Length: 257
Image 1 (cartoon, rainbow, N blue to C red):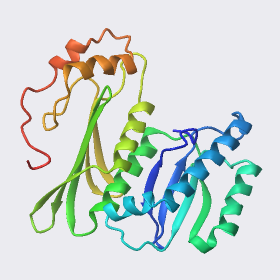
Image 2 (image 1 turned 90 degrees about the horizontal axis):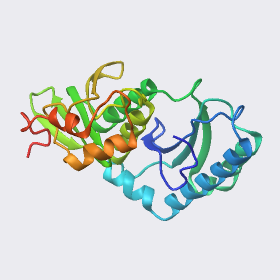
Image 3 (image 1 turned 180 degrees about the horizontal axis):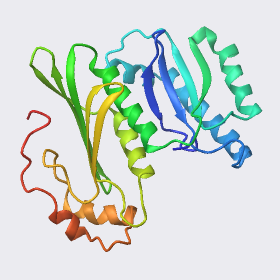
Image 4 (image 1 turned 120 degrees about the vertical axis):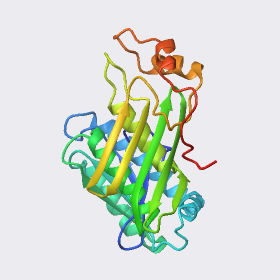
């Protein structure tokens, strides 16, 4: 993921100060890649984020997540190394000129390139932020085949009740990025996933490259063909073979419908 995707809000979260945090994920290196291009990409991305706040788009997103009166908005650039001086200058300008609008900006270093493991941690934290307290376990699932994607959360509460939620746009985007980073030219990439979550540092992830978990909705045959167009495999896989590995009828309904 890079900030060259100007019109997409990469990740939405909340910090301890009650601010809505809009992350910008930059997987390129300011020390090794074309810094002039990266500077211009950041400028466009920053302007898009400011417009999203002023137009009310961010307010609608946070309201859907249950946050009615955020204390402000923070733009956070997440990159594998220290940003360039022009990027840091733009961050400083936000903090000086948009303070009256309760908008701040900062940057955070990954310490390394974004990896599937980092995305997994972000997925788990996003789920925990959404489901709140008094839960025992949660299951986050996704099926991404071709251009089709679905996902959901199943929460088992301490009182024995089970709640089903659809995956937020943030979770969907994180899953798509995880899938992209997991691509292998020989075996392709995963097409279905289930994360079993017991806590921030306690979860298990199960990814399937060749079939769909039996609890997950089934994609169409056309999407299996599209999957191999987007993520070619050299191991001889065919759309028919992938489709043949899909269970005919899901054993459980994760949405509770």
